[in-house]
Image 1 (cartoon, rainbow, N blue to C red):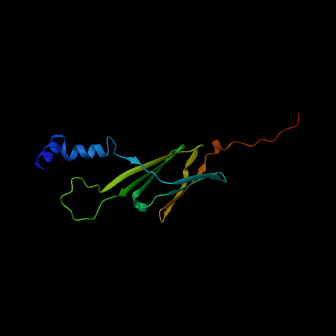
Image 2: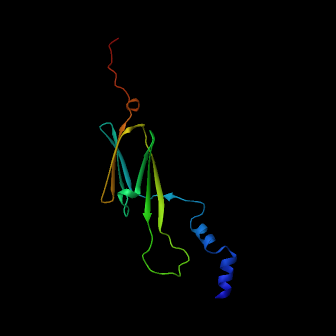
Image 3: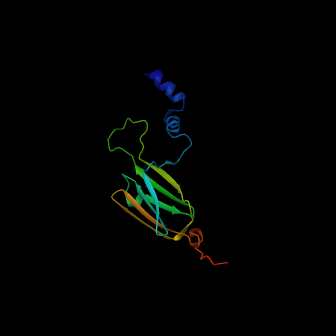
Length: 136
């Protein structure tokens, strides 16, 4: 047992183990189910984000992207003091590229029971203009 511990410590101990579990990343992709649709000049996004409270979700919008960031509490409540590594929470994200530009000032979001509903108005210049045909 002592030999195993010495090998573990020689290879970097707990810090090395943590790097192997999360190599070079501080954030991971949020693997959440979502649906993006277009209706009445707006994009409508529905995303299922289970196990997160509304205060732990951050939404950033640009004219072409919606970025969802969530703090996921993955910690354990066990009273063990012999753990080598205990993960308390994790910051995950999901970036959604929009097919057309949106007006970032006209975005509304609601989060209830693990479901995020977001509406974003398509920018006027991205809607396309209808023109009447004139007889020649």
